Length: 311
Image 1 (cartoon, helix red, strand yellow):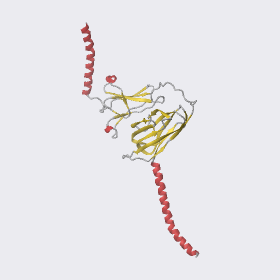
Image 2 (spheres, one colour):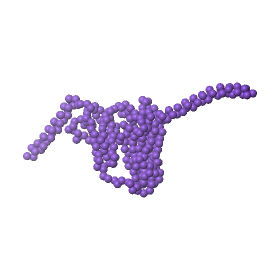
Image 3 (tube, helix red, strand yellow):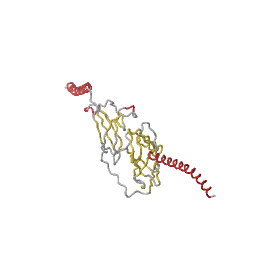
Image 4 (cartoon, rainbow, N blue to C red):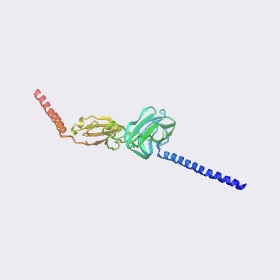
């Protein structure tokens, strides 16, 4: 009887062993698949410099992207309780985004939108997108969250990557903070910056554009202004125009000087300039010299003509 039971037991073992091995392989493959998926995913998170503040205090929240594989586009919304928080400033200086399709901005009360691209993509752990400075209005827990966020892989096909979101909550307490800094006059220029001239198939039919970005630690960058001119003597006559990066150049022949100035909230100015990439042709130079000679002759003749009439 014991021998019979052993034979039956061996038969069951021969059957169960391949089956259990098969289950183990399936289970191992499933874990590998899940781990591989999570490893290749990206994460968009909000980092606050403080999670406990007092009414009237300001604090900063950064939007940071982690990407195992390179991404070249990201978009989304930041939602916050507008009855509890005021947006004082949004900064995108030192951003991993090169070109903003939609600059981070307050679209509606309690909603900030953003959308941008970086040709060639970027990856890594702490890729700063932009930062928001809030001011606390009243007590309570202010939940700041991300919604409608997307990130596209830099794979030539714009494949959407799996994107995890990490939000933040800030506890606002009653009373002013004794450590709050007194406001001082801002007399410091925005940080130095450089201009990049480039073109990309995804931007305005591959037209030439100029990209720029800087930051200001005190009052923040209020606006950017740009001017283009071909002849240095006409620089004063060229008007300043408000611009956003990337800015499509008026002179697609790249024969103009390009100057961009960053103006902070206190009116301080920092300028950056690039010379023409291409030289003017001889007949273009002659044309400008004719204009200069005409202006000079007019400047001499008119005073003389007026003097002659009067005397």
